[in-house]
Amino acid sequence: MRERISSLRILLLVIASLFLSNSGLAQKSSVSVSGTIKDKVSNETLPFVNIVLKKSTDSSFVSGTIANDIGLFTIADANQVTTSWK
Image (cartoon, rainbow, N blue to C red; front, side, top):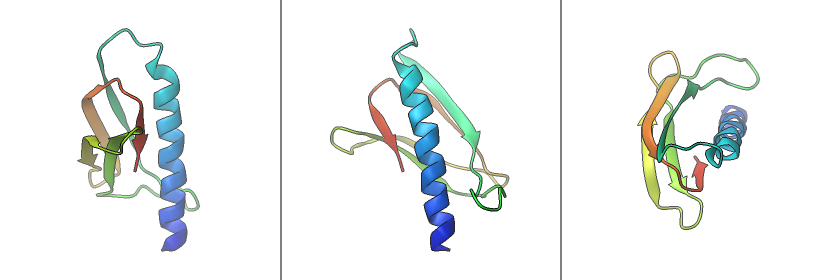
């Protein structure tokens, strides 16, 4: 179970780094982020995972959602601020 949580954190960090690397290039004041949560080892989708978007400066909540039963999630109208994923 710990290995699965660790794998999930690594996956979310990769998603966050992709999101942050493109945030300076976007011209809109808000963006939509979506994806699929998968286990790194087994590559199985992970249902009902919490996705939290926080400010990296003070860890205050920006937005969040829960993945559906097949691991898909979308956060619509996420503000363009420096963020981190948990």
